[in-house]
Length: 451
Length: 186
Ligand SMILES: [Zn+2]
Ligand SMILES: [Zn+2]
Image 1 (spheres, each protein chain N blue to C red):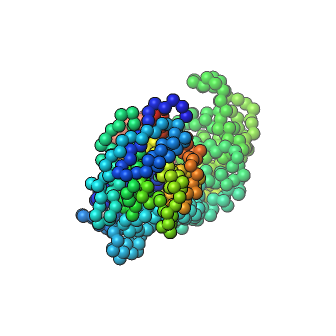
Image 2 (cartoon, protein in one colour; image 1 turned 30 degrees about the horizontal axis):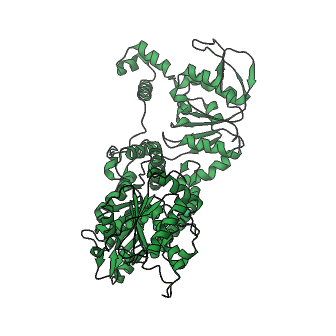
Image 3 (cartoon, chains in turn cyan, purple; image 1 turned 135 degrees about the vertical axis):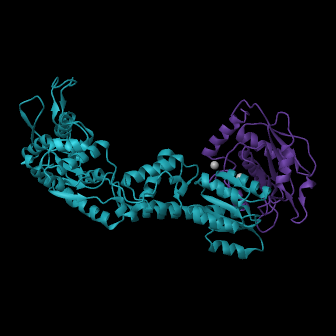
C-alpha cells in the first residue's frame, strides 16, 4: 500500500460500519468510526481525516447534510457517499455537492480498492495544487513579512532596491509592525548577506551597557568587566548592524556613533588606538524623530546620517485586508509548534479580528493567535477564543513604558513652564532637586542648549 | 523459521474436500514454518444464510468462530464451500480481521474461471492456499501489499490471483515474522 489514509466510516448500521472498518484496516489505513453525522463532526473537530465514507441514509443528520457541513468546514477532507442500489439520484446529488465518489451497496470488493485509489490520486493532485498555490503565496510574502495590501507590496518592491546600496536606512513604524523583519530582509538581499546581522535594542539598555556592547571594553575597564570583549561594532564587520529604537540613545552616544559612521573607525573603551570597522547601519524608531530634531531632543546631523533612506512600515490597522493571511500564517506556525492541529478560524472570529484595532500590531496578533491555539480544545478557533482581546472604543496609542510616559509628561510640563525648573517642579508636585535629577536621567534639554 | 511454539488450526466447515485442507496445511508450513493441524469438522453454518441474497454472512460466521477457543491453536482457518458476503460487498473469497484469531476461506468461487468453466484441481488448490495464506497474513497484522507478486496483494480477480506466486514479498515476510513473534507462536 503506497498511501496511508486517515479514514472515518460514518454509518448508523453497526455491521456496515465494522465491515468497512476491518476492510480499511487490512488495507493498511488508519480508521475511525462514527455512528452519526453529529459524532462525525465532533471527531472532525478534534482530529483531521483524509477521507470520510458516509452512508446517505442516517437518522438525525443524513449523509448529504453531513457532506455539506464537511465541505463547508473541512474542505480538505474527501467524502465518499455510500448508498443502496436504487437511490442513484441521491448519489448524483452527492457528487454535485462535492462528494469525491459514490458507492452503490453492495459493491464488489475491488470496486472499493478502485475508489480508494481514485481518492488518493485526487488528493495528490490537490496537494500539488496547494503546493503551486504555496509558491504563489511566496509572492505575497518577503521572507517572513507577509502582506497583500498595496502598502506592503510597495515595501516588498523597495527592499531589493534598498539592499543594492550601502546607505544607512531608517525604518519607522509603530511597535510590533515588523521593522526588524524589514531590516533582516534588506540585509539578506544585500551584498553583506553572508556577513552577520546584529540587532540591538537601544531602548532596553542602560547607556553604559549599550556603550560597552557597541564599543567593547578591556579587562577591568569597569566593575564587572572581567574579560576583554569586542564590541558589536567590531563583531558586525562585513555585516549589518540594526539599532532598534534609536530615538532612545543619549546625545553623547549620538555623537560617538556619528563619528563611527563618518570615520569607519572605533576606539574601544579604555584603549587609545582606533580600529577599522565595516558595517551597514539600519536603525528603526517608533517615534517621530524629525519632530524630536525640531524640538532639539535629537541631533540633526546624526538624524541625517542615519536617515539616508527611509522606509515606513504601516500599522496593522491600516492594512486590515492582510489580517486573514497573517492569521493563517501564525496558525500554521503555532499548530506546528504545539502539534495541536488547529487549522481553522471561523468567519465570525476573522471579522472580529479585522475589526479589532491592534495597538500592538502584528506582534500582538501573533501573540493572540498563539494564546488561542494553546488554549483551544478543538481544531477550529471561535470568536470566544479571542475574548481576551477587549475591543477599544478609540484607537489607543502604542503601549508605552511608565518611563516613557513619565519622561514625556515632565518634558511637556517643562515646555509649558518655559523651562523654569522651579515653576515646573511645583506643577509636577516634586522638589527642584528631584526634577533636576529627572531632567538628567531622561536627557531632557532646552531647545537652545542643543546648538 | 524454527522452534514453533504454537499451531495453526484448520477447521473444515460443512463438506470440504480433504485434499484442499492438506494442501493449505502444507503451504502454511512451507511458507511460515508453523505446523497447521487439521481439526474436526464442524457443521455447515446454516444460521448465517441470508435468504434474500442466497449467500452466507461472513461476519456472523466469524462471530461464531471467534467465540470458540482451540487448545494449542491461537489462530484458526475455517474452510468452507459456501458463497460468502459481507454487508458492503457482493462476495468475498475469504475474511479475516487485522490481528484477529479466525480467518474464513471459501472454495465456492475458486473452482471456475471468469467464463464460468471449471478449472483444474491443481489450480483450485493453489487458489485456496493463496487465499488462506493471505488471510493468515491479516491474522498476523500484515496489511495489503502493492507488489503484484506477493500473496498480500489484494485481488478479487481470479486471473490476477492466478498470477501471484505462492510467496510473500520481502517486506510482507518481515511484517509476518514480527506478527508471528508478537502472537507468541515463535
Ligand atoms: Zn486481504
Ligand atoms: Zn507484500
